[in-house]
Length: 106
Image (cartoon, rainbow, N blue to C red):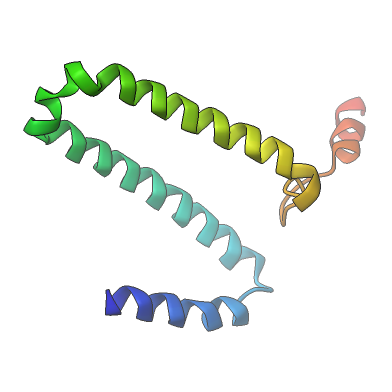
């Protein structure tokens, strides 16, 4: 846990120093996206390999699917409600809707 905290603490000043480098930010975004995808895959593999969990799937399966779907729906609704407040649609690489429409019209 100390190594993880050290990496996080070291990453903040490095990120601050490199914040004006678009290529570094773009590569970092891609690496983070793929890292999260790989971690989710590994989590799924670990859950699928758990014999105890798989043996209880008939009793917790429907309930687990229902809870998972509710969590996803709640996250999507929350993001949609918070988007206007937090300007989540305005990002570093976002293209305004008017710019996209103008480009499509030409």
